[in-house]
Image (cartoon, rainbow, N blue to C red; front, side):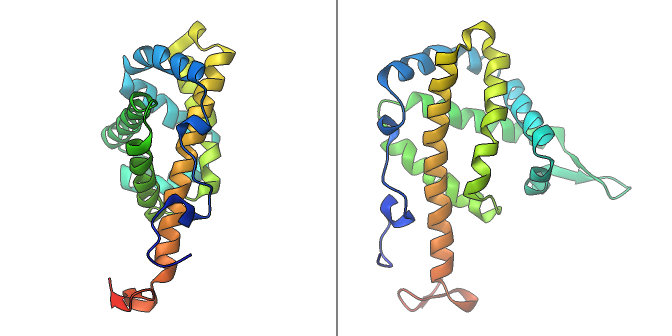
Length: 192
């Protein structure tokens, strides 16, 4: 592996795209159910993050930038910031749905998003903990339309998203480790 490598194989993960995770029938299920989910992205997103923080209390520390400090010194979520973040996450999910037939652009976006999340100390091993919260949000929004087939289709989409986010996180970590002390880049002997 050379310093100039920027392909997904540089992450150490096999290069995979959406068709490696989702069947054409699952694509159809996801696309048919998305309009119901999209009817209220803020509420669905808030439900997902509320569930995540109920199930994984320690993850709150990763979201300090979305919190305010009370006079007591306690951190509390700023509802406007949290809703904005939750809505943005749901819009990204919508982009995934829109790009299921051609994942190249979206794969690059997810890898960049993974790199960004690595800077917030999000680790690849944390990604599986988000699925139950997403599943609960989809179930809440879709009701009876959230069949076992729909759940599996959405899970496979989440697996694809997680794979690409992990690629980005690994890429960011790899790039950071190639830099020496004080930003000295070991690969090309330049300061970044």
